[in-house]
Image (cartoon, rainbow, N blue to C red):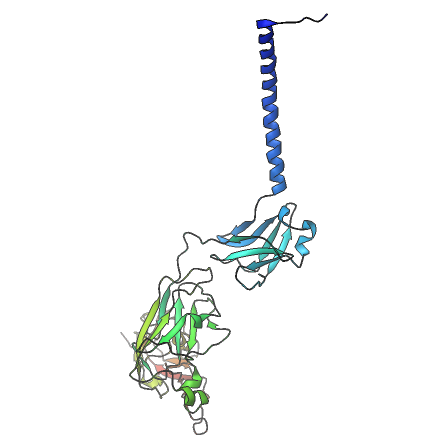
Length: 382
C-alpha cells in the first residue's frame, strides 16, 4: 500500500533525494566533460609546429587532421613546403609519417626570420614563422682587405671577412663602389656565380672586372679602368645583407680609399728583408716586404725547408697590411742553411705574381713557368 506524504515532511524528503542526485550528477558531468575535451583534442591532433635540434629548426610537424588522405600524404606530389613570397618554390626535403602527424625534414635547417607555407592540392594548409634565437648575435664585417688607404689604380680584388657565414649568390646586391660624389659606379665588380667564398663561408673574394683593367680589351676601351688615379672612393656594404641564419649585419660598413698609380712590377723576393733568428731558439723568422701583397695568398704560399729539403714545421702569420710575414718554428733552429720557398702564385694587389705581370702584352712578353722561387738564409749564432 502506497503512502502519500504531504507538507514539511514531503519537502524534506524531496530535498534529500534531489541532493543525492546532484552528488551523483556532478562526478558524472565532470567525467563527461573530460571525455568531451579529450575527444576534441584527439580530433584536433594539435597544430603545426617546428622541430628543433641544437637550436636549429630542422623540421615541421603537420597534424593528421589538416591533411587530405593522410595515409598517402607522405607520397603526395601536391604536398609541399614553400617559402612565403618565394615564387612558390618548393623547399627540398622529405616527409616522414607516424600515426598522428606528418613530419617534413628539410635538407638544410629552416632559416630564422622567414615564413614557410604548407600547401596541398594548391590549398594553403597553414604557415609558420621561424623565430630567431634570442641569444643569436648579428653578423659583423670584421675586415676589408687590402687594409691600405691608398690602393693601386689597377687594383684587382677585395677580400671581405665576416664573423659568420653569409648568404651567398647575392653579394653584389649589397656591395657598392661610390665615387667622390657618392654616386654608385656601375659594372665595376665581376659578377661570378657561384661566388668565391672560402670553405667556412665567411671570406668573400670580390674581383674588380679584369676586362676593364686590362688595357686593350673591349671593356677597357669602352668603359675605362674602374679606378682613376688620385680619385677618392668608398666601398659600402649594406646592413641589409643577411647571414645564413637570417640575421642582418650589425651596421653598415664603409671603406674609404684613394687610387694611386698603377702597379706594373712583379713581386721580387730578393728585395724582401729577412730578420734572422738565432740558432738554438724558437725565435721567429720575420720577413719584411716593401709593398703590400695579397693578404690570404701570403699565408698559403710561403714555406721553409732545411738543408735536406725537409719542410720545417711551424706557424705563419701575416700582418694586417700584408707587408710582414712571421714564421714561428715548432722546434729550435739548427746551425745549418735553410731556404725560404715562395709559390709563384703569390700576387701583389694588382694581380702581378712572381712569374708574370697581370696586364701584359702576351705577344711580346714571354711568361715564366717556375713553380716557386727560393731564397737561402742562415740563422745567426748567439
